[in-house]
Image 1 (cartoon, rainbow, N blue to C red):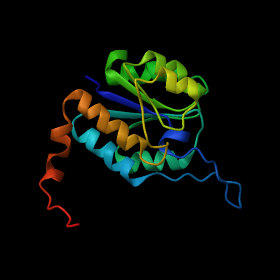
Image 2: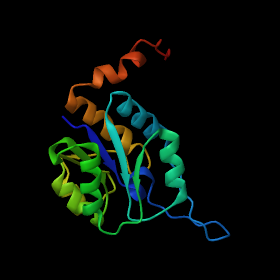
Image 3: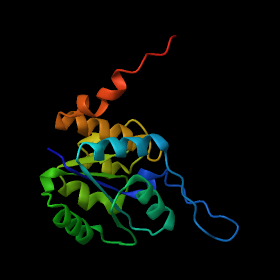
Image 4: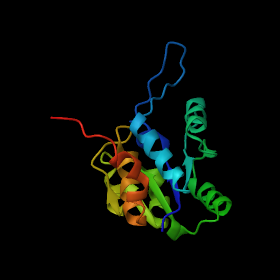
Length: 171
């Protein structure tokens, strides 16, 4: 069972674009359906952490908005941070899924129990992945990856049961 999901930021939580405003501040945008999926994941009693090589205040704001308590940013070597997160969450490698897209994520993808690469990931990340999303990073890939993990855990029906009773839209 996967009980901890570790997310990269640029290229996974976001599209990977790094736009700057007129004052030279980096701006990030996040996909609303990914946020909803993260909330469904956590509602199942499962954990999420964010691990990024870059640092941006908007990531902390988004994590706070979603209730993600572990956010580690600005680490070029992600392995020690990964190990710290796993210790804090009491999770073994086999209980961890990592969503990544680029070369700095390869060590984590090769180590975790359920590696996921986004559709537009580097080809080396895709080779290591147990699952490659159809959606690009920042465009629903997290939602898709979480659905796959919930199915893997056997909790998909529980996570989506309240939505199945809603009236269907007419064609």
